[in-house]
Length: 191
Image (cartoon, rainbow, N blue to C red; front, side):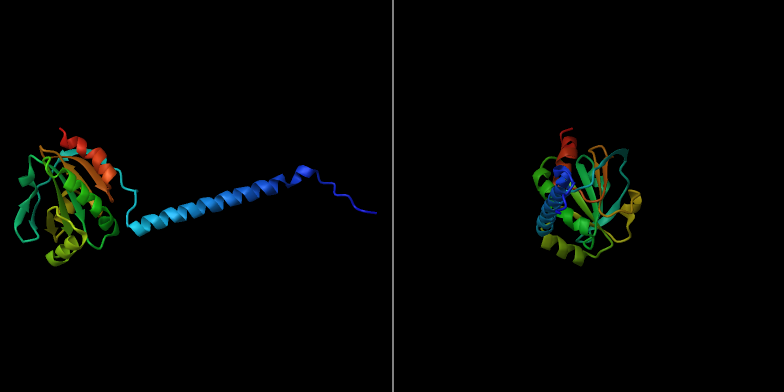
């Protein structure tokens, strides 16, 4: 006597649903991996830190430029300044440099300057890095980390936007990107 299967015909649905879910999960993982590879191969990521709105007087800061000449943050009063602290060994610092350079090139004739303050490296290392990456904005040297102390941060990179009157208006801890610079700094240029 043949044995009859007593399961109803719809009992395979959970297996089908689980199988379809696993296929969709696999496709999603493959797409994410492909996107990650594209970002890694381009060296760029669309992820960037969000700035915080702040309001405090810019600190007094006296450093030297790559030629050993004295420079001062106070000498830039009357322009909008983006001060960026960085080091060549810092991956997020290196990642944001093309966007910083692009923003500087786009807005340097609008009463704006960008100052890259290198933390702890010598002029030879900084000059070689700037040449290799194509940085044209002013670079200052800070061998004793006085800029980090003055802005009360330990993060690299960090960025601070100072308005024409010398008030710090925006602060970032972590890498920034062109979309954030355009959205948050450009309105200050129009004031």
